[in-house]
Amino acid sequence: MLKKIVLAIMLALPMLAGAQTIKIGLVDTNTILTSLPDTKTAQDKINALSKDFQDQDSKFMAALQKKMEDFQNLPETTPQATKEALAKEIQADQQKILEFEQNAQSEMQKAQEREMAPVINKVRDAIQAVGREGNYTVVQELGAVLYYGAPAEDITPAVKAKLGLK
Image (cartoon, rainbow, N blue to C red; front, side, top):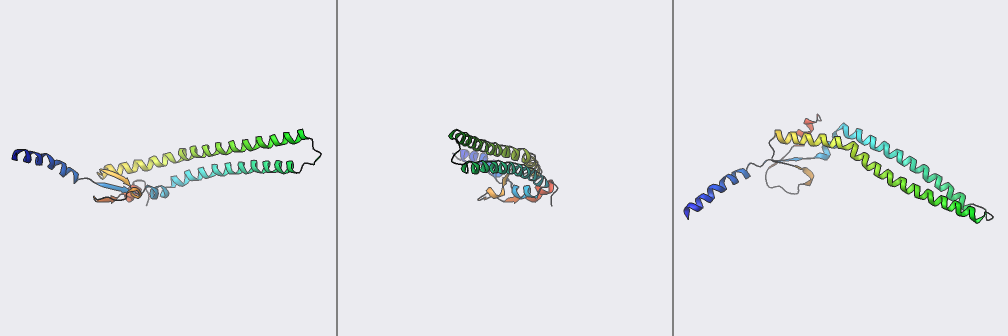
């Protein structure tokens, strides 16, 4: 019986010793992303595309508004067939605007992903490099950690340095 207890303790000791060597790194990726010039460049491209879509949408809406005003100001003597044709035209324009807005939203999402992906990959690579260099067992997002019992180190400054930021 004593041999079994001693054997169990001997088997458990290496696991306990290993548990004490956990090294946790915390990183604030939002701070890093907002510090990178690449983020501003990507955001400027996204904002320019958004402005283009908004400008085009405003033109479509102004044209639709004009058609609706013209329709409302038709004289009472306007033939019913003409009124129906104009009403169908207005409905078709409304549908085109709706489709344009949906396509614009989809394009904006794709542009966001396309422009930000290289920036996010660059930050991720820097985090991984700092993690390897510092022998961290785990690197977590600083804002996502609610509690940690083991000692943890904020590696945000090291990641920013790896990216050439102050």
